[in-house]
Length: 307
Image (cartoon, rainbow, N blue to C red; front, side, top):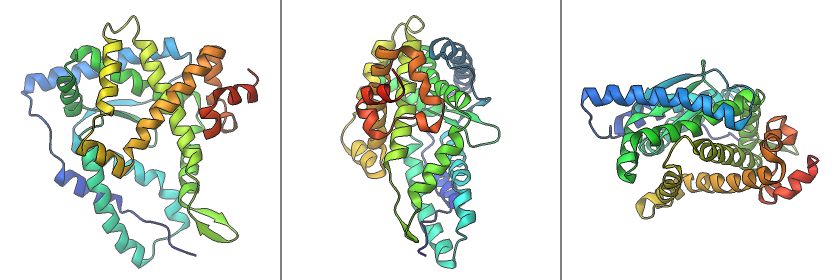
């Protein structure tokens, strides 16, 4: 039986923390204003997402405003939790432990780069669940795009709080994702271990990210005056070329960008046909989720679920 890839996430956290640039320095009074503004935006976004998404309950979570190094530590810890079950089933050999430090260092470099761009993240794998808002990146993005800070912070929180509602409406989703990741890494077939199928997790993540994008835009209508401008500028930011685009492709973030777009197109098509309640059926059970073919042809999913 072949060893599965190992990553030492403690090494990843340490390497990422050491190499990541801290971001623009801010005076203490601006830091206080930023933290208070993000907490307010997170609270207001919860109310608005509840009204628009029609999902019944948000998963309990703490809102934490973090710097880049703290985001790296949290994300490395989250990855460790997600992969803990696989590690228990496949205890590391000495070679895997040595390799794990090497791959951990590589993961740390990747996390350091991602940490300079990510604005927020809902972590359903920690205890307690947390909504992480990366303060230096929020400031950098709103300055680069030339947008109103209050509008932008609220808009970002609308997206991340939608993820809270997704996990609240689908308490099975956390374990389902862990299972899909395990299947991706280890696919048992005829007693052999082979690389898993990427399509199931791609479909799930596309629905989740697309749903959050659609809800953030709908929720922003009537609440954020510049929502259309924000969407346009965010898409421009995602499409930015040059070295930035090359790095995104290298570590797979270009795939996530396509997940946003394909998932959002699916959600808009379903809402147009079956309304928001019809779309919310994706959170009923794992078997109701669309597969990748249905994601790209929403009418097939609608027929399957009876719309």
